[in-house]
Structures are given as structure tokens and as C-alpha cells.
Length: 288
Image (tube, rainbow, N blue to C red):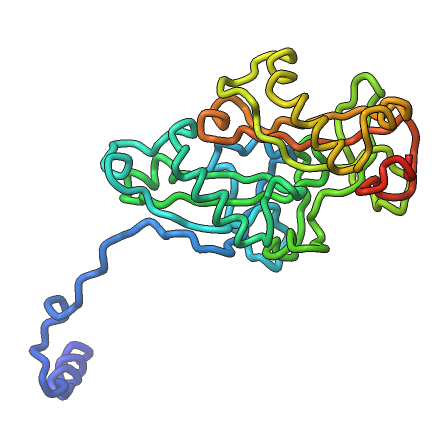
């Protein structure tokens, strides 16, 4: 009886017009699988606390909603072309000189100023090996927010876009030294109207083309140019600066691979033997 009822029900079922009763021959083909391409304004988080742990590790950061805590933003996305795109593996960090130049220009547009003048770090990421094998040929120009000069990351929920415009929240300014006068290990931000002993005076480009592997080579690369920046920033001659025991310090931002890719700048600071509560810009002799 049960079999008879089921057969009768099937016999009464109506077939929609234009169909042929086949359930498998009219499905459209699925689209080709592609690696998602990141976009300008994407945000990223990481479990690392130090920016140097993620400099050349694109897989070490994970995309996150920008309204949630994140430390990195994508300022620009470009595409590899020519021989680089035809290679069987993604370029390594030291092979990204052309992309680094593009990223510097595009990051400046995104931020409203040169990234090196802010509490930021430029990161140039090719695809991971898995993404490259999947056909991805993009490169990301990312900027990471820093809490201190030593590279401690600064999680945030606000965008970095426009933060280096005049008066921007991420611009470098006055700081305090961590460590001793002879050996400081970090610089922490401070308002120029609060007690501080250090101030950012500008970015200097290396005077030498080879990677400075020791302190002597680093001084050759940056010392004279940094001191010139101090004089220009304070508007003070050497006699005034020497009398006040004014010193200078610089923070080279590149490791050896990044140097090869084009990152050859250092951030330069004027350093004082005492705390002051005003900026040295243009009035070094008076402020000191």
C-alpha cells in the first residue's frame, strides 16, 4: 500500500515548463578560484609586539575590520609586471627596490606626509608563496603604527590616513630618552609643552651606498647630515649648541635586506642634558 501511494504521488507531480527532468545538466560552471587581492585601506592585526618581527613576514599579519584593534593599514596595492611577474616565486625583500619607491610615493599620498616623519614604519609585502602559486601578483604597501622609536607596535581603531598632515596625530615631535646619556635604547613620545629631553629634527639619507655594518660606518653615513639638521632646526650655531652640551642621535630604520630594497634613511634627533618644556625649533639658543 505504501509503495502504491508513493508511486501515485510521483505520477501526479508536475514538471515546470521548459525543463527536461534532469537535475545535473543545467548547472552553471563555478568561476575560476582566485587569490583575493587586498585593497587600499585594508587593516591588519598581528600577535607580534615589535615591528621588526613582521618586516618581511607577510603571512604574519591577518586582515581585520578597521573598526577593531589593528596595527597596520594598506596604503596602496600595486602589481608585479615583466620578469618579476613571470618568475616561479615571489621576489624577496632585497629585490623590491622598484616597488619600494612606488610605496614611498603612495604612502605619502595616503598619510599626508612622508612616512618617516611619523611614528610609522613602511612595510612592502609581496604575496606569500601559496598566494604566488595561486596566481597572485600584487604587492602591498603597508604602514604600521609605532608606540616608540624602538619599533613597539601601537594598536588602534582609527585610520592612519591623513595622520601626517600638518598637526597630524602621528607626526614625530618631542620625546624622552630611555636609558642613559651615553647609551639610550628608545624614545617615548611627549608633548613639547611637557618635560622632555629630545626632539625630532628631520630625516636624513645615508651619505654612503653600502650597508653600514658597524657603528663607525653608521657615523659616516649619518653623523654629519644629522648635525646639519640640528643646526638648521634650532637656528643655532655650533658655539651655542656646544656650550649647552647639545648632542644628536639618529635611528637607522633598515636591516640589510631593506637597505638593498632602498630604505636608507635615519630619523635624526636633537638631545639635551636636561628637561625643557618648549620646542627647540627656530629658537634653540633661547629654549636651551
